[in-house]
Length: 513
Image (cartoon, rainbow, N blue to C red; front, side, top):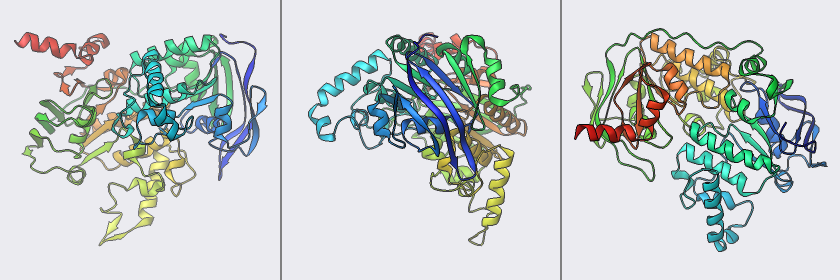
């Protein structure tokens, strides 16, 4: 263990219920100075609930939280912050209408103080940004940032407060492997200086690389604790799931005709998000097309075009054999295009709607849910119940507001909503972000099943292993430019990395000239 014997945090018999659901069942956990404890478990195992209790976001039904020997008042985030506890949330807690600088500094200083000390705050954020390799413009409005940039702001917000205990809830979910490596390198320096970390991640190779100890939750209970050096990824996976994880078998694809084609499509850039630059792409029946790239390089623009959110400013969009003159989300849905959106909170669900309402968001006006303008809520509820059971959505029931679900269970509900509609084209944008290993394998098996039924699948992911493992054809996007297609198994990670960095495009231009 890299830490000392000084106990900086002690959770004692924490229990938390949401109605009939026991999210945490008498969990006790200790953290030492300079130590990293990885907290593992399947989606809905109770990890985020436990950390929200520690950070004051929830009040435990029973149990206590001690920080540096002092018992924290329950449900008091300010007390947790004052005690030196910081948290990088899995779900962003940022104000879109404020700048990066204002989001980071507010809560530590008043808005008036922020404005008076803007230059000083700006320089501190820049210094942290450079030190931790978390590049973001302090003057940019958060609403204009990509998902990856927002995650960086969340990390900077915690680091700005000079925390002594840092809770990291899926901190690398939207970072590239290189950015994650840089973050870990800097965290190790902070750990050597006494920072203590609780690290929540479904990326087991990261858990093995950064943690000293591992605690595993299953169905709200602490089922195992072990030194990281005494275990391995397979053993941890089995502890999380209660059984061994098995990746789906991938058969050779049998692609058919193009169902949707982009021909020399361009779109304008929006703020700091690049548009597409003369992109040509074919989505064929029975084929998974993987899109690799560093966050913020045109993936959002391409997803918007495919999903009907944006019409090309130049080029042609062809549905089957028909060039499109009009394009909208409604037209896309009517033509069998289904979306697994990148941001499940902002564009995938409505937090205050229940699960039933969320399952029919894109099909409420169609049979069997609607007839003659009248909703059949009994059929909608039956549909939601079927998805909950079939896709293992862990929740009290279909009348539950979706905002109380874990991110992984939200994602499984969206997946069910998409695939049960038997779509012709599936736009899967970061479909397994934040999911445990069992859920990842399940999502992948369902995407493969959709492919084998004849659907065209566009898989957008920043996880190169996922792209290489699942895709029949791979494209790389960089600065809005799209690479040629690469067949499965013809490119190494390093070769794809060259294209992701833009160097492949430069070499292509040089060769052409």
